[in-house]
Image (cartoon, rainbow, N blue to C red):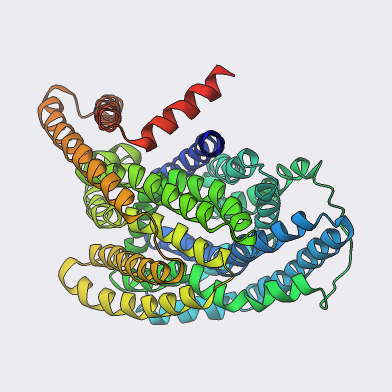
Length: 522
C-alpha cells in the first residue's frame, strides 16, 4: 500500500512540474495571439496566416507528433527494458533519418505547390482566402514541419527517460520569438513577421532540448535500417495512428473550411476560441497524459493489468477534477476573458462578442477532449491501433454532418458545438470498448469522484456568476481593472472549489496538495 502511495506521489510531483512548464508555454502562446489580434485584428489577412500555419501544423500532428509520441514511446520503452545500447542507437538513428527524409520531401512538395494549394482552398471557401499572402507565409513556415518532427522525437525520448520539464517548456521559445519578430518587423512587412518568427522559433525549440540527451546513452548514426524490427513495427502502425490521433486535426480542417465559407475573420475567430479553451486542456490534461503514458506503456509491456487499471482510473479522475470546473468557469466568464485577452486596437467589441460565443461551445467539450487523450493512449499501450482508427474515421463523418447542420442555426459557433459533441461520442464509444477488453475499470470510484466534482463545481459556478454580476458594477471598463476583477473571481472560485473537494475528502486533491507541498519543501 505504501509503495502504491509513493508511486502516486512521484506521478503527481512530475505532473506538477509539467503543469508549471506547460502553463508558461501556453501563456506565451496566448500572448502571441494577443499581439496578433492587436496588430492585425481578425480579417482576410489573419485568415491567410491561420491557414498557412495550419498546414504544416496539420502534417506535424498527423505524421510527426502522432507517430512519434504514440508509436515511438511504447517501442522505445521495450528497448530500454532490454538494455541493448547498440540496438537502441540503430533503431533511434533509423527512425530519425527516415523522418527527416520523409518530412523534407513533403515540405518541398508543399513549398512548390503552395500557390495551387492556396487556389484550391480559396475555391472551396468561396474565394474567401488571400492566395498571395497564404502562399508567401506557407512557404516560409513549411519547413518547420521537419524541425518540429525532430522536436517531437526529442520530446518522446526525454519523456521515456522521465525528463518532462524542458520538453514541456520548449514551445514557449517559438511563441516568444514570434512576438519579438512582430514587434520589430510588423510595421515594415506586416503579418509575414509572424511566419518568420515561427520558423526561427521552431529551430530554437529543438536546440533547447538537445542537452537533455546527455545521460541517455544515445549516439546518432547516419544510417537507415529498414529491416530493423522496431522500425518496421512503428511504420506498420503509422497509418492507423495517424488517422486516429489526427482525427481532431482533420475535424479542425473541416471546421475551418466551414468557418472560411462564412466570411472574413471567422477562421481566425474559431482559432482564437480554440486556443483559449485549449489552455486548461493543454496545461493540465496534457500534463497528466505526458507523465502517465510512459508508465502505462511499461505496465502494458509487463502485463501489469492491476497497475494499468489504477493508472487509467487515476488519469480519468484527475482530468475530470480539472476539466469540469475549468470548462464551466470559462463558459460563465467567456466575454470578460476574451475582452481582456484580445479587445484592443484592431480587435473590436463585435469581435469579442463573436469569439466569446464560440468559446462557450468549445469549452463544453473540454472534459471529453481530455478523456479522449487517455483512452487513445490506453489502446496504443496494447498496440491496438485499429479500434481508435475505426472510431476516428466515424467521427470525421459525424463532424462533417454536424457542422453542416449546426452552422445553419448557430453560424460559426455551430462548428465549435459540433466538435464538442463528436468528442463526447468518441469518449463514450472507446470507454465501452475498453471496458469489454480489459474488464472492470473502477467505475464506481470514478462515478463517486465525478459526483463530488460536479457538486463542488456547481457551487463554484454560482459564486463566480454572482461575484461577477455584483462586482463588475464597481470596476471600470479599463483592461487593468477588468483583469484585476477577473483574477479575484477566478482565485475566489478556484479556492472555494479546492476547499470543497478537500472537505469532500477527495483523493485527487489530497495527492495534489502533498505533491505540491513536497515539491516546495525541497
